Amino acid sequence: MKNKEKSKVLGSARVILRIVKDSANILHWLLLATLLSIGSAYLAMTAPEILGNLTNQIYDLLDANIPIDNSLFNNRIITLAAVYLLSALLNACTKAVMNYSVSSFFTCKIRVKMSEKIARIPVKTVDTTPNGEFISRMTNDVSIMGGSIHDIFGVIINGVIQLVMISIIIFTQEPIMALAVIVFVPISLVLSAILASKSEKHFDNSREQSGKLYSICEENLACFDAVKIFSIEKTQNEKYGKVSKKYADYSAKGYFVSGLVSPIVGMINNLSYVAICIIGAYLVINGRVNVGALVAFIMYTKLFSGPLESIANGMSMIQSTIASARRVYEYLDGEEMDEIEPEGRGDVRGEVDFVDVCFSYVEDKPLIENLNLHINPGEKVAIVGPTGGGKTTIVNILMRFYDSKSGRVLVDGRDITEMSRVDVREMFGMVLQDTMLFSGSVYDNIAYGKEGATRDEVMAAARKAHIDSFIDALPNGYDTEINEDSTNISAGQKQLLTIARAYLSDRPILILDEATSNVDTRTELLIQQTMDELMRGRTAFVIAHRLSTIENADVILVVDNGHIVEQGRHSDLLKKDGLYSRIYNSQYPKG
Ligand SMILES: Nc1ncnc2c1ncn2[C@@H]1O[C@H](COP(=O)(O)OP(=O)(O)OP(=O)(O)O)[C@@H](O)[C@H]1O
Ligand SMILES: [Mg+2]
Image 1: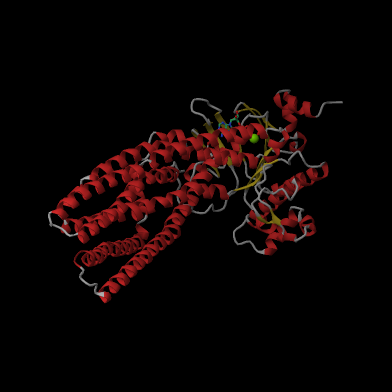
Image 2: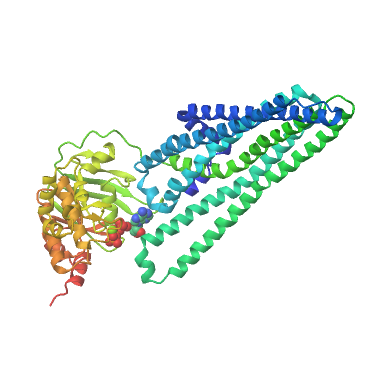
């Protein structure tokens, strides 16, 4: 996923635009939050004037001994307290509205989109991308992405509105002093923008490392046993440690650069205070303004620095949230399988043809070349051959996990690439060694085989798969929960469960991986017998490991290096004295 997309990385401006577009459905909430925030800012802005008047009252008392109008003084104090209180309240409401709308309607919507996308990702992408890379994008990155809405709407847009409001007030009050304040704004903003763009690269790198951290965690858990058996905890820990260090380094650099924004903007603001003091003192001495007005003005300047600092900070913080948003969008924009509307598979007899099929996983490294094959409905086809020969690859093409580069695969004379993948997969039942069980109850795991299956159907399928007595003996029978890694039932039982599921799904063509080798002979025989029963009346492809079980196959394909090197029935192939007979004799030495 990474290499290919690096070349078309979305620019920051485009990511921001996309976020704004994607937040269209919460625009009314964002608008409400903005209004509340403006209300809060407006109230806060009335405070300096009240404070200025209070100062003038005290100043008059000190200077000219004019007695204080107590009721006016008290009223002003009460109003000031009320203004601050209400402003804080509105501010809290702004945050609440923002948090609620973003997490409920924005992040959640993107998460659902990401989950739906999984179904459309080509198998190739999944095979070549570490799982952790997907997991980190779907969990961590999407959560951080929500923060970008706060940065864009809550901080930057609100900040700009507040800046404009305060600018108007200060300009109407004292244009010369206002000018001294405004002059520093572009300097702050330009410096912040430069620092923000400098931090962007570090945040991008840190998010990439975070994806790798997830991958290692995922690997450690998925291969928990292997890690223990080979005692590679240390190596794995070192690997994790290294990536973790890189992650920390990049994050630290990013936050260091973006952290510079606040002190720099603060310092520039302080310079503007100095300017105000000089100009203000001059104006007071000349009697152009009174002390109260100067106090109020200094307060406004302080108010002015708030949004300015938050805009500057927002601009730098947004780089870290955008880095995550970019990864989310890269995932959402990733290549998809072309798909047509499913029409329903209809009646399928189970005739299968491979016509001049060529295939390779890697460009310029042909694996399967000119595969030709005709299989009649109901025939049992055994695929044998050395490891890496291409047995699973044939199944991958048949199921349209991968499409052939040239040639055609036909089922009942219909090209499978002209059918929707859903319809193609509806034709096949699969029982693999690598059993596909989900977390959920035993019942659910069988019932996945058929939408809307009744309890009777599920139980009948379990009976046919000879797994019913085992299920009855479980503590909660059919309702026993299978844990996430399905470690609480044995390998043989898992395979029988998937056979039960295949019975229930009642597909016309079967793909079977023979019994797993780590079961006892009795279970193996039981699985074999159950599979034989399941195959009756259906076209079946059997990936065979023990050749004794396929002696009755209608056709045996011997696959080596992507080619069918031999093809025929058991007895004929033995007579040929080729690869098949060599494999057979190595498994069952004569005499
Ligand atoms: N996703 C993939 N990407 C690239 N190469 C692959 C992929 N899957 C398999 N291969 C390669 O294609 C060749 C055929 O693999 P395949 O899985 O079909 O073998 P197989 O006959 O099923 O072997 P086994 O008996 O070990 O299961 C091997 O050389 C393998 O390394
Ligand atoms: Mg294989």
